Length: 450
Image 1: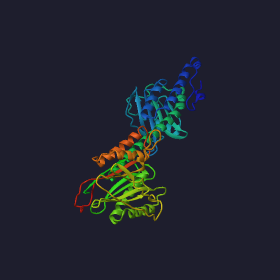
Image 2: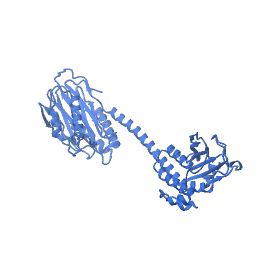
Image 3: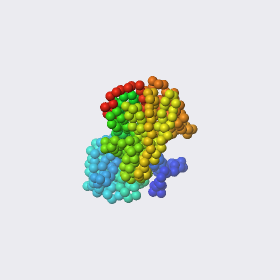
Image 4: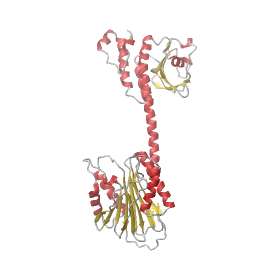
């Protein structure tokens, strides 16, 4: 019976039972081809793939050593990747060029080599398999005409491999080649994913290190911040900066977009802010105008930053504010929440933009909250936003003795509860300033950022 008429294209159809009666050996071979063709497409681990292949072929072909060599395009060598002897894996160390040995010859000529007695073939190279081989069959594994590797079976008996074996293995070879290529691509994808994960972890740690946790030497001010990115890397950021004796600058920004690009743009903004602060000590509106010009000059298309920038003067308890498209800052006083209506164009969009400024005279017990839109727009399963009303209710319920850290944690907990069971779509960032009764008289020290 000619097996070529049963060459497989994708998964083979099941073998009819009638064929087992009329042609039992051929039907057994076709059943194996059908089984293996289906199984190979579902195994992406190369070691498991080849081990399973060796077991299935053993049902039809009585071999003593099963091995697979893959073509390495860089070294221009066939390299052993798998070898099995009597159901036990053995070391695979062989490397041969094309046209050398039986494996190299079969690969170089792109045809099956079936040798009845290797002792009579000068091309045979004895390998350390622990088996005294007498016959061998080598099947090139090809995808169209591209060499993937070779399938090599050895036996201690001469004339162990027949023409039917050759036909079956030739048919199977095309499926093995595809399966090996899939496994290679899958392993490459896993390697890239692991490398990307490592890079993201490193980038996340660098981003975390860029963000301060607080500031000292500011009499009468309790300060806290929180940052919860929606992805591995986020586009939100905040910063605290010394702004003269007893004065602290606070920035909260939200970069358009998500992920790595937004995080890098945010890092650029942080670096630029810190550079401007060193060279210039101007009011918040001037600061935003300078930063806007610098970011616009960078010419990063489709990127902009919404930012709230404020300067707190400990001596006067005044908070100077300017806004570039961020949500309004909130002021909690005596249990009532007020939005400080201050607007402005996001940074990096239009050259020469000027910004307005507002001044808040704060009192002990006052709480000022800067929140990114990820807080207000946090959604529940019904796509209802957390919103200003819920945030105001949380702030109104705050006790006078609650610290800035406790307030920050309360807001995050409430947004967590609101969005429980749904994936976060945006970063959540908070800065909370709480004015205390402390009346330090030494305002000569610069804030210490940590």
